[in-house]
Each structure stands twice: as structure tokens, then as C-alpha cells.
Length: 137
Image (cartoon, rainbow, N blue to C red; front, side, top):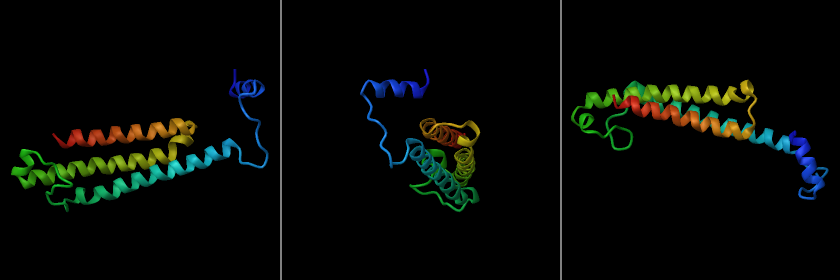
């Protein structure tokens, strides 16, 4: 049974109100929501990429906000800079992947907004987890 047939049966049973003329269809609202969601994920990817550049270039000194606070990096600042560079490279790649996926995932797979909204955070968490794991090597 298709979605249209199910909706028609529900409407005939009186459980769903008839469509109101003059309002936007559900499809146009979904397309607008998908565009907004794509823009948010695109912006997150760009921000990740921009925030990772100082880490990659080694311009961030060891600190309490953006450093690895483990005994090995506390003892050696050179090791701290190396860990930050590796984390920066991973975050840079994560940002680029997020931008690419945000721009092309719905075009390639034709995903509905619900699946799109679930796929991108999953990819983002996987990339950030990889960055954290690689930084402890």
C-alpha cells in the first residue's frame, strides 16, 4: 500500500483533516526545511575547517581550552604541538567531508529530510571520534 493510499484511507475514516486550499503543501515545506538543514550542516563543516587551520599550522599554544591535557603532553610542549597538529588535520578533513556530504547527500541518494537529518550527525560524530582516537596515538 502506497503512502497516498494509506493517507486516503485515514482521511476517509475521519482521522485526518482534509487539505486546506491556499496553504503551502507539505512537500514545499519539506523542501524548505531540507534547504535550511543543508545550510546548517554546510556552515558547521565550514566552521570546523576554519577552526582547525590554527591547529594544523601549530599556532595554538598548550592551554586548558584547546589542548590535550594528559601527562605526556603536559611534560613536553613539542608533543603537545604535534598532538594538536594531528587533531587539526583530522578536524580539517572532518569539516571537508561534512561540507561535501551536506552538499551532495540528498542529490545523490534522494534522501527524505528525516534520513538526511539522521545521516549527517552520524557522519559528523564518526569523524570527530576518529579525530580524538588518532590524537591519542
